Amino acid sequence: AAGVIQSPRHLIKEKRETATLKCYPIPRHDTVYWYQQGPGQDPQFLISFYEKMQSDKGSIPDRFSAQQFSDYHSELNMSSLELGDSALYFCASSLAFGGGVDKAFFGQGTRLTVV
Amino acid sequence: DAKTTQPTSMDCAEGRAANLPCNHSTISGNEYVYWYRQIHSQGPQYIIHGLKNNETNEMASLIITEDRKSSTLILPHATLRDTAVYYCIVRVAEGNKLVFGAGTILRVKS
Image (tube, rainbow over all chains, first blue to last red; front, side, top):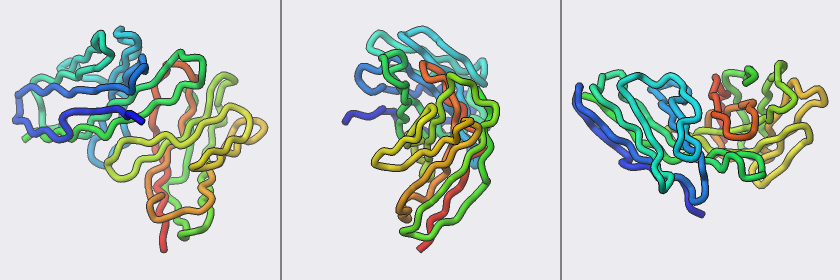
């Protein structure tokens, strides 16, 4: 079965650079979530989209922005990168209002290293 | 979403059942109990969910107390590959984010 696809899997950027992470949800899923997981930390919710509209916002820095496109893929844009942005970034997708219980499935993540 | 409390870590012998408890005493009537696990640096993996009744699937069983204030995830025959961090999350079902708290580190030992 198709899973959530994230690209790239690994990314190395220098301080003050920008980065774009991409997420391709499971086909027919209408909701995308982004999470950040620092070293030794639990995943922290950043932002979510339902039907291309922002549906919830967590602890996402102002330097970050995200959107969901018409084909339901999503991109997380990160600017003025800082060393502390080094983390695993996970995307998850779900069928939020499909009539069954919503189960979110996660991608394998993008490991961002800021040097 | 209701807060959950889990043990920091647990050990289990390979081949034995692993029973992971979770307290969620402030759970609301419309909140489900979800379990996810994360094997080192991989994306969290959905295991099972339930509302009131006990549930079983190919991975695990979920036992929810009658008052819904606690639950137990059971891995019937733990293997070394079940070593992971297990997260118990309570959440309104539709379209709501998953909030990860401090999960349980399960170590399965041979």
